[in-house]
Image (cartoon, rainbow, N blue to C red):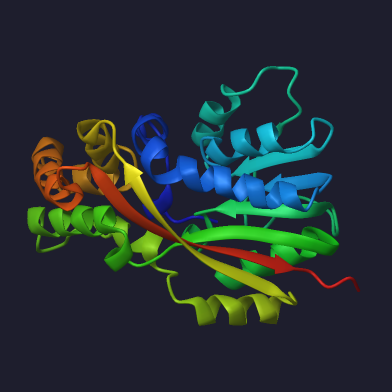
Length: 270
């Protein structure tokens, strides 16, 4: 499913979870789980679950007897996710391709995917698979990042990489923000068969408790680190450059601007 530019392996998942997760993902995970729980689904599938940040919120928010299956294309990410749950908590973990789901038709009442579909090389196929495994009347919840203009940390990271290797800069930080246009997503969902689509633009002002740790997450906690290594870029120089840029962006308050777009698409009853 995913390209080499989106593979999370080695030490990357740990940096991602510890240093990027609390800043970029935790608050949106709580909001996603709240929205899902409002519809009281009994069978929930999460795709691109990563290190279980949303999974943890879903399990805490859904009724204890609701089924929850968490999948990701990268098994190392799921290993970290599993460690967040007790053996008696009802969560099933399974490596799976979000564009070729190993589940029968109409298997789930809700599907959840936070900041994952940007990494699907075939977005249309991902929408079709979600539609297929949803029961009639089921809901597909997912989120994407808005553009760099609304998420300065990504823009700063991308600029630092470009400055470090102008001839062939690592381009990872373009990928998570590649689906900021709403109309193409609406059209893709409609073509897959979905009916009603609810869209929310959700800005967030996030206080960063440890800017140094967050910057290390930006450098070491995503597949751009592999691209950095391949190009012989000194990662510590990148840490310094990004730290300086982000220090200016967050100002004295230490508050970072974030903005995501949340979607809920409903499968028709018949």
